[in-house]
Length: 413
Image (cartoon, rainbow, N blue to C red; front, side, top):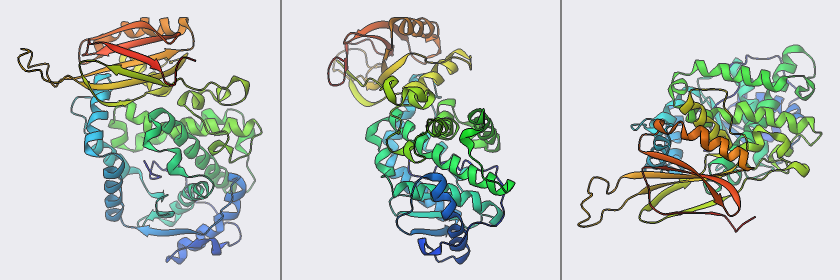
């Protein structure tokens, strides 16, 4: 989605007066917004490690205007047919109920949480007209970071739908984690009247995750969402901040988390030591083809959502997906065959999910664990170990038993 995600600083309060005026870099019909944003820019630029190269436009919007914008963006990026297929895929994976209204749920979550957003399409920043002045400062800080980011890299390109779920979520984590840390440093520094560098504070990553996770209870629509959707919405903030902290602690430039240190997978976000240097571990891209059925949707879960799947099906919140190296699922429909005598199965949805693992031990542990959980899928399911171009892999079938071919994209490694 565009930059109208959750506002990570919902729990923050206002701070004292800001830095010197830099109003020439802010264009707004609202003098209050222009003045406040201009006060924030000098410190924001230094902490973000990025430079505001062109003036940013800033305006207020009513809640009705915001809702029209959200609906338009959902129609553009998450149209009803795609939304229904994603919802069906999550249902077949045991992650969502059969009647999940994904678009309605996302809209409800955004309604209760979005107080402001940066729109890369118009390169403008918008805040809700009913926001109290005390809440504007951290809100503007966070969204101004997105404006600065977008003048350094193309935020839409980093999160384009064709990149796939896992890579998009990883990029969103870098984007939102960076904005969240910059905002918190500046806000807390002003609160305490001292300069703060979060990268030198021990256990700051864990403290940030705890503080941000506590905000979930304030939002009923978010709390009621299936875990896989909550993870997708909160992961960029909860884990993204921790990832960016490790980038800073490694001595890299503060803005590098969205450039040369941009993570390629949620595995790299969860394990920053695998994101750069000799230990860099890029995910293995897979291709899955089936016979006797039509593929109507395909994507990947990534390590983050694979972890959610294991935890949800088992009821054990401590399970990890350690050793994950890549995955691909495809949603399929079995076409009707005249005279086949199996009208009930014709048109029924099924799903196959292929994964590859770092080694045989990790693969076997995954297969053993998932095999014990197949009763949690809504249709008959089986899981088996397979070899994928020489790599240890696993294949989950849900409601489909036809021929399947799995390959490493681009050929064997």
